[in-house]
Length: 422
Image (cartoon, one colour):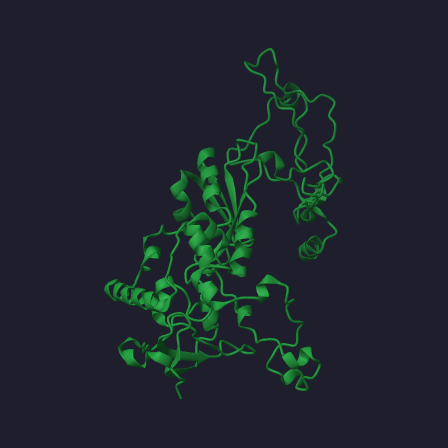
């Protein structure tokens, strides 16, 4: 049953009748199959005092029931949610949004002037296409750096929790876990956040939440460019599993020529290298703490120089303090080659330096497992036209260090081959 509607019964044509509320994602909840109750002309709007259709629903499990507080006309004039009265685009209080866009909307507060102003705005809303806000907000710039830094990109469902149980505070609640209210210590009454008013939030004055956010904006960190002018790479973190390199390129190409984009899917990050240092500095300035792609807020940092990228030391440790493990299947260290009496190319190939037009500067020992070079006096070695001669059988090779597992005569494969030959 509808409540008392006061002095608005004479102007019934201005009463609002809607089929669905204007809500933000946080107030609507995460349940896609939400159920609402609709009460036509259920209450008066807390701003313009005109009757409107009230919706009531539960946004999720262990959440409190929520309802619309203002009419849709007042919601569209300020582009806010009908329940929490936060901006629909940024999720911020009206006072913070107006400060970021540098606008001052002096909405009248007296009854007669407010009604006249509301009727004019409602006429402007009906004539607009519905895609952009009306009034001074529609003429304001599209965004600002401060709003992009403070904007909430994901729903904050913690705001839908039940209220604190007053009986539990007094020590008289006997419901235990079945109590639908929270059993927590209440907020300090001296805390400014404990004194919030819905009208002050709508008009953008004396809002303690807005004051807290504005103080945070004034102390937010900055991203200073590194002193090394050769660094032109930006680190992009928090990509998730859906953001691709093409989406990153579509955003960062506006700042300058991109040399490479390296996407590390396992770490959910990317490295974007620009061709010019000025382009990298511009991209870092325009994207730091306000880069949002596909609804995700991304982290932007400067890359490191080439000298600081974890060089390996003699002990096998990188500059970051992690030990580099050897590649499995390869020997840890090869033994030094056997020393030769004379390792000059002339003696190795039995060439006469006086008759040779050019002396080959090859101080290489014979590979392991191959026969020794021919003795002096037999002329240059004869190479097979189809390739090097095959190595001798395993049993004819001289004993020495085993370089690879396949050269070990004690392995199972060698024994099996011997028994098969027998």
